[in-house]
Length: 215
Image 1 (cartoon, rainbow, N blue to C red):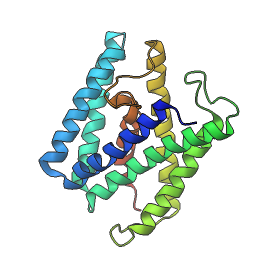
Image 2: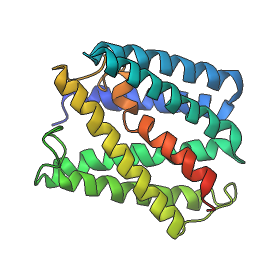
Image 3: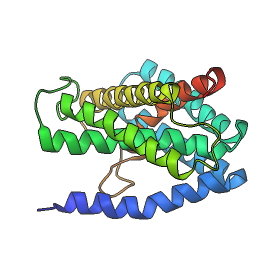
Image 4: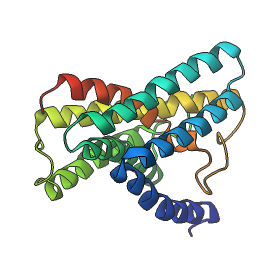
């Protein structure tokens, strides 16, 4: 039976996804406004869960850098919002694949830091991210100049891995603070930081790879 929390999560996603896509595709001041709001909320949530002053400062500097790379990816590249969607899709697919495979196959735990994460879930995150990007590139092949290749495959694996690491890092700080979620602004999901924990680590790496790799 589907529990109430899962129903809230699904309904929230149905409402949020079109809204996020709107801001990303529109770009301009609407996208900037959206990014600033997400940054401010994420920063507030980080300050709230960080118990040491040094962690607060280092985390804030990292958030500034991460959101700056999000902005740069959106404005710097040809067909720019597709690059942003490309990375977001990898992170979301990693998250969903990890959740579904972990629930279905269970098995050995991935790490004590985040006891709900399993090795099967990690594998599922990689697998679904690869499949999602293959579908994405197939349907948008006329709008994106790069095709699925060995470089794209390696890019997906790297970003999916970084996204999983980011998720574990934020989980570590949540456990240290003895809280389940960084906030409650999104019903069924928690805080903004709960939803973008993997993304804030993935975007800086993605920006670096976009600049230095020829897809």
